[in-house]
Length: 207
Length: 173
View (cartoon, rainbow over the protein chains, first blue to last red):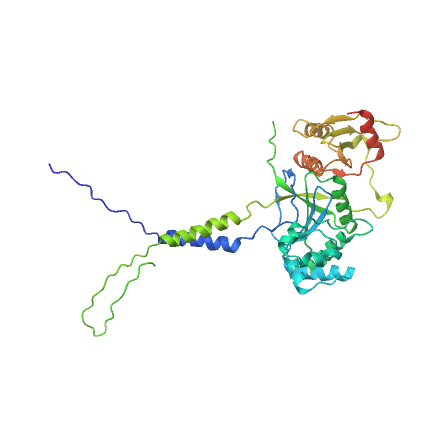
């Protein structure tokens, strides 16, 4: 009895479709990626069971950190240039084109408008190292509400609708500061707020 | 796609010799590159969009007399103290009525149970949330979250009054 030799074929796979798929995924990710913006301040948000997602675009973020500082951020670059000239004109501060460009790339900031040109002229490293005092938001010097109102106006002009306002408070921020922000916005008839939180699971009934 | 078949140029209409040149391209570097890019983009993509909790504040009344009064029997007040403390009392505080202040907690068996009990007893209950100035924002979000969990429709963030603070002080909780 002769042994039956199994016919062995060398398994060589055609890799082409695999590469196709890989590149398809790559292009997909390349086109859909939005890089995480660099925040001026680290804010550790509390968690809640709310499952509403933050919209992708046209968002104004108001950050409140634990040292009672208020920061303002906006994600659309185009209305931001408009916003900068408007607020600058109001306070008699002018900006160069380079500064405006830097501003439109900045995700959030927390300096009074008088210090803003100097702040924008610095390079990235220096700007990170600088401790920002926060935007003045008291009754005597209320620049914060001007930023919000002008941003809404700029957004309306650009997109035909006001931006979505989100408040991002640190878990250890004190309530009076957050309340002050809310009251300032209420004075401008903005009555719906969105508090940015982390997701936690909803408790199950019967536990 | 990757196989290129060269067709012999049939110029004179002579013999048609199909030259079979199976050109195999080594795809390895290509795959390397693809996966390198893929991992890069996967790692830099922001995965979790943060969630938002909606908070609707009442529209500011034009005049003082437009403020809505609530009945004392429907009122349930939650006080957020400092150091993550939480208290509650039933009814309204006035000069002659001193409700009993009870301490509670943020966990599942604390304020949540009480809220559910109050609602079962009285579906019309309105929860008044009063954060003390020294309380932190996390507590505020937590209690608003409890409102969502217990499906409490009527609640309001109210400024704390002097009497409320005194009540906390005198109760010694």
